[in-house]
Image (cartoon, rainbow, N blue to C red; front, side):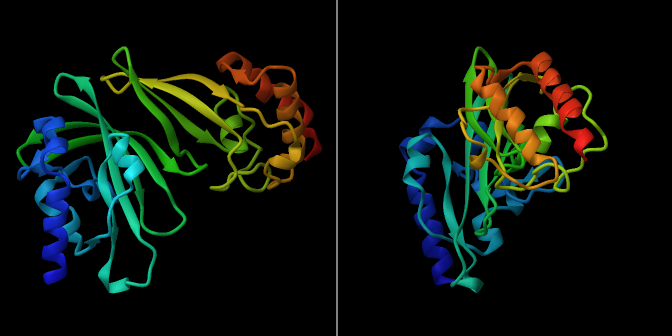
Length: 266
């Protein structure tokens, strides 16, 4: 009991003053910012703020990531005291005003393992102790993990990590014969590109483009899957030709070339 009480007071102290004054009332609960753990392992589209957070989980606070705090995130690192030798987890969020009492919420969570779970939600305060929440996008590292989140002209802009399988799946006519893992890399550490999106306050998600990056050698790419080697050669050829930014049309062309060149090898 003493440990939990001290940590809770420490938590309150860290979020008092300047940070509390900077966030909207919709993210204040019991005179403190909404607990970041409320946005981890959620079920349904409502959050009861009385039934979530550090105290409800019986976790202890283990400090903060100063870099994330400096970037405007709210949250902390935590640990389950029943497993004091285990790695620490963390929960952070950053809000963006979507207008009309709506907010885009970018969340970062880890349970202490290798997973890094990121998501974007559209959030509204329904009652004093209830948040409504709609998840717009999310994933774990290369399996749909989110980065580069910012607000511009009343839209939220972000990137989503893609595996080779995800990249082909984004095209208008992906080959249904191509299977994740068996044919193309789809693991959580198999990133090859980023897809960029825009979203408005009506939760309309719009694909913008894919950035293939600057990889110059197939040795730097994943090798999981029977068709991955052929995919890698096609991928590198696009970058070498200066075609690293793919709109929907050029992405469709890439997928068509992959189908023509690589799937016949299977």
